[in-house]
Amino acid sequence: MTAPTMELAPEAVLSPQHGHCGVVARWMHFPDSPALRSQLAQTETVEDWLYRLEAGERLSPEEIANLVRIALHTPPPADMAPKIERQQRLGYGAGLVVFNALLAAQRREAGSKGRTLRGIDLAISGKKASASNNVNEIVWKTFRPVAHLWAAWIILFDKGEWEARPMPCIPADLPNFLSLAEGVRTRAETTTAPRSGTVLTPGEAVMLPDEVRRLLPGGQLEIETNSSE
Image (tube, rainbow, N blue to C red; front, side, top):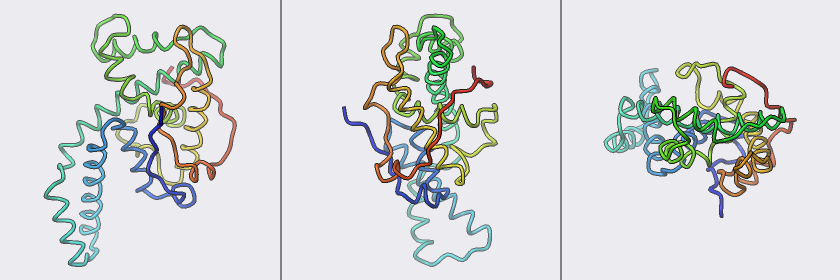
């Protein structure tokens, strides 16, 4: 199995900008849809240009023509917002699966992915049941390739402030965020969950380019208890 690779350049670590954060956020929200990632990128481009215009910046005729051309084929931000919010909550659920499984392993407890999936299923459907096809298909199967990114977000930032925090972080925090996510991925691919093999199967998670991964700051991964438990 060949893992997908995120479109990031070394500058994402050496000189991170909002655009680099946007690439990561789009993968986190729409891991299975290149078309929706592209639509979201275009929406963000239009929003950025409109912000520049409102701030008094003068765009060249070529930039204005490009803005109009993109805007004509781009969903309005108001149309994308509900999709993003829904995807964020589902991705968060996949992150919880990884977070809770690693936390249980760190504590040497008998945690399982299935138990977390059942809790997520209850939150989504309002019905107490086994880990159903609903949650397995909508949450785990779709978001498993980026679950390590969501788990890193939970470890670093989860305070229940969904709308107040940029996704996945401010640019200055991006190298540490990516480093933590890589640590989560590596541990999840080597940690066995009860009755379900390793937490993540090697080769499934979206990867960073080698030239980006080599530049990441190191550190010891510790899965701490927080409000998500």
